[in-house]
Each structure stands twice: as structure tokens, then as C-alpha cells.
Image (cartoon, rainbow, N blue to C red; front, side, top):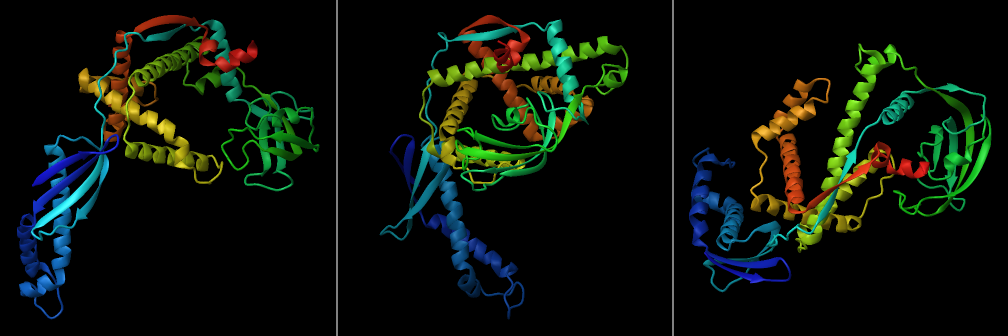
Length: 437
């Protein structure tokens, strides 16, 4: 087999491969001979079909099959011989030659970039230092009550916190649009479930009132057909309901698994869960800083094929999310995700190199420890552990998570880390803190 490599633009390579046609002849001969025993052709007894008949009927198919297999094998042999690391699938085209005893083809492929990792020694990372206080627990308990509130009919006018049951019809320049109407839609004023201005516009209304609102869809609205456009909503108010918050008592605590210890035990459980979420958030924000720094200091060229595939996957995932939320079925263009896909692909390539160079690994013990940690947050830990251990893709997710943690530790050791104090609300709910200010 003869192989030559031509370097094209960027990461593109063109392989030219030649091999003797005789490499296939023995395979074709053997398979045709085998078919004389297994093929079924009218007029012939099984196992008694002449080879000439088999050749006439099956030669083209068998030769094509053998050629395809040989192309694949020779391609992998060629990239191994030339020490190429392909990214994505190649485009293979046969090349005509004057020598009928030679099979020749060209394979165009992209390769992964060669990386020389840059130092993170000049990178400074910020790690949050947050203490959960009694006021923070009070606020969380109040939020839990609101999450479990019920609504009762009211004759009062709608106000902040009221649940207003409405029928609405939206029009743009007098024309209807997809998803423009709703019947008996519960809107809780202050939750921000509708576009800006809708909830404020129905404050003061009572059951039976009709309200007309002239608003604007946000420029970044998910349904691009109406994004940024002015819209009129004709609204009919059916009911006004007011929140009825549950009492903090043993009956309420039991819903959260607290069967003894009363309020003290409930608050301790709330604080424990707050700490779990806080630790996750602190780790996540530190990880994001690390990943940003890694991409910033390691500029690489990424394979176009991988970017296109990633962008396609992202578009499909977003489309499924929209459909699940009944927010439109228009096909999303993959080019909307190209830049984000490019960053993801680049980061994946760089992280893989960091793992390889620094010999990082997710040991079986570390994987089991992480699964135990996750399972401990569920009602039936053993069931969760069994689920992870019996699903390879879930184990792979845990391994990736552990490797990311190790990469963050490595990066923090390479650079510098400074702690910064935050209040719980300031760190976990920065927008809420801004509103309060």
C-alpha cells in the first residue's frame, strides 16, 4: 500500500492511497464460493448452484462490499502509518487510473490541532466565601412557604402576589400570530412569567374587567417571528385569587421528611440543603472562571466538522426544549450556535490535552465516592447508586465531572486564588440584591 499526505488549508489533510486490486480478489473469490452453498435461486437445489451462476448474479454486490471494506481498512491503516489524528469522518473518492490492477482513492479529512499548553501562572481566580445566617434561613423558609401556597378566591382588586385568571388575545398590527392567545391562564403578579408590562398592566383589575395593553416583545424573545415587535393584548379578567401561605407546623414539616424535632429540625434541614446548593454554586462559578481562562490563553484552530456537528446538536436540543415548553416549532438555524459550538469544541480539545499531559484520572474509588455523595441527597440512596452503576453513560458523566474537578484544582495551583466575601443573597440571588438596592 502506498500513502501520501498533502497539507491543505488549516487542519485539512488529503490522503492519497493506492493498493493492488489483488488484495480484494481472494476475498471476493471466497465469498462467491461460499454463496454456492447458501444462496437460494429458483431452479437450483440448495448447495448445488454452479459458481458461474453465482458470479453472474452476485459478483457486482460482493465486489462492492469487498471494496468498501478494503477502503475502510486501508484508510485506518494509512492514518495510523502517517500518525494522523482525524476529527470527524473523511470524504473518500475513488480516482481512475490507467493501471486496472491498482485501486486508488483520495481521502479528505480534518485532524485535531497539535497543542502546546500555555501557562496559567498569571491567571487570578476569585473564590466566594459565603456564610449562611439566620436571616438567610428565614428568607428561604418564606420562599418554601410561597412555593407551597394555595390560592383562594378574592373580591379585591389584583395586586402584587395576586393570582389573576385571564383570557387574552395578542395581535401585531391587527394580525394574529402563533401562540397569540390563551384561555383561563393563571398569572401570578410579580413572578415574571409574562413579557414585561403584562403583569403590571393588570394590577388594580377585578373579575369581569377587560384590559387593553400595548407592549413590546423583547428583542431576544425565543420566538424570533415576534421578537422586538410591538403587540397589543386584549385581556379579560375571570378571577382574582389571593395567596394562602401554609402554617409552619408539624403537618407542614412532615412534607419535607421531618417527623420529629419540629421547627428546629426543619430549619436545620433547610440550612443543610442551602449549604449543598451554595457549595455547588461556588464550585460552578470557580469552574467557569477556570474554563474561561483556559480557552483565553490557549488559542487553537478547531476542526470545522466538529463545530458543525456540535452546532447542529445544540440547535436540536434547543428546539426540543422549546417544543416541550410549547414555545414554538420553527426550525432553529445551526449558524446561531456556531460561536458557542466553536468554544465548546476548543475547550473539549484543550481539556483532553490537560488531562493527558498532567496524567489526571478518575479512579474507580473516586467514582464510587462521588456516586455515594450524590445518592445521599436522595430518599433512596441505594436505588440511585444501583442506577448509576448499571448505566455506562451515567458512569461516564461522573468520570467527566471528577476530571473537571481535578482540572479546576490543577488550574488553581497553577494560578492564584483570592477569596471574596459575599452575603448569601448577594451570591445566590444577585438580581434580587440589585432590586433591593
